[in-house]
Amino acid sequence: MMHGQVWNGSQDPTGWFISEKLDGFRAFWDGSKLYSKHGNVLPVPSEFTKDFPDVSLDGELWTGHNQFEKLCSILRQASDLHNSDTNLWKDVKFSVFDAPMYPGHYLERHSFARLSIPSSPNISMIPTVKCSGWAHLETMLNNIIEKKGEGIM
Image (cartoon, rainbow, N blue to C red; front, top):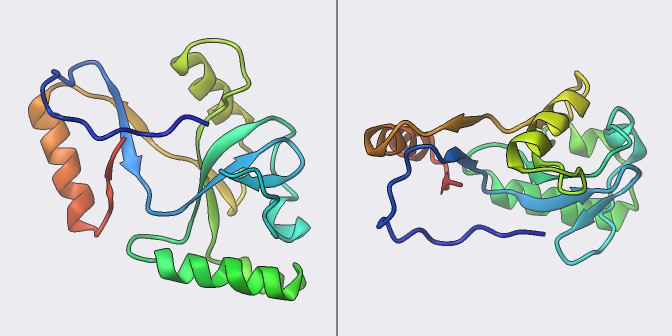
């Protein structure tokens, strides 16, 4: 899994593909199970993933802005309940940003991931845009911070 790095601001972001950095729990879908960034199978109910595609996807489990503690609580309870309470997952979404096993550069993988994701309340693609310059980056970052978001990738 690739991880973000702190940007020192010295490079012009024009032409970069940027998206909101979600304050969630990193997860990898292998086509049949969800894994943590450490390779542990996550205790998600099969009902939550029933519409997920049979392709590998990288993303974040997320419950919304400023809701990381809520997500951690859900994951702890899910471990304790051994997947028995699907209602526990009603506010969780798997927000996808890449299809790392798909051959090709980032745009090809991103397009493949977007086209692979079905219409489902439990999975979606994180919106990504091409940065038009410093002002665009700053505006997007300020909008995210106003919503209590974490930042930009």
